[in-house]
Length: 291
Image 1 (cartoon, rainbow, N blue to C red):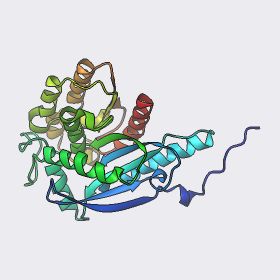
Image 2: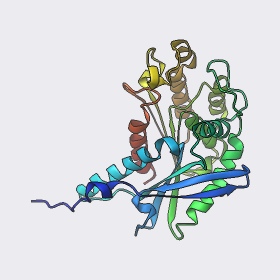
Image 3: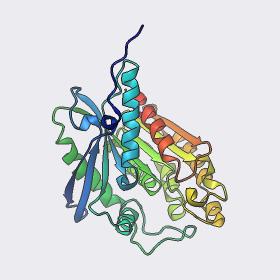
Image 4: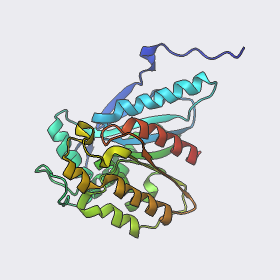
């Protein structure tokens, strides 16, 4: 009979999290960076994947728990998942309105959102500065904590974070090896990221993996909270699934032989329910593609 290693008891399965604040010169304010996962504590393998995750106030524990789940069942099957740490890049506040205002500024590529979605009186258009802070400050501070490790960077974002992930892909392609854009807000500024996608051609020959996902029900009426309580008129105007299919076609057409692309419409998922299913699938695709 095949024997299996003992799994930890339930409390020990919960991924450990440690955090630090970083004073960003590029942004002129503090960011809060959280490292989640067993590999963030100790790991004897040289290679590791750092998943830089946007919006950790909402999704850090979900993402880290998915990694822990995969690690546990790989162990149960007598194998090991690649070493993965989820790096939440967030804000040094617990005030929800402040978090929403900061993400609105940092994740949007232009100052104009468009006419479809009613927007609060926030500032927008800070994606370029946030991308510089993420690549030139945050990643340097994080990776300094893992000297001698062979690090693979992945960027993951949902909604406006997914929009920003596409912005990063098009503007600083070599900054990350993997990109996970989940339910990206492609409606922003009259589909500005679709226009950028049409014009973009990867200049690098570096291996890259891009995973994109959207929920099948994101364009369906009657979604209530699952689609952010937007009215059916707004949902129709956003055209989330329709725009996503355009993005998928563009990425497949304009990619290169060194860029692996997977884009999926996840059945029965809405804008606010898609993350758990999409993150697990996207992580597996990116790890397999870059192995």
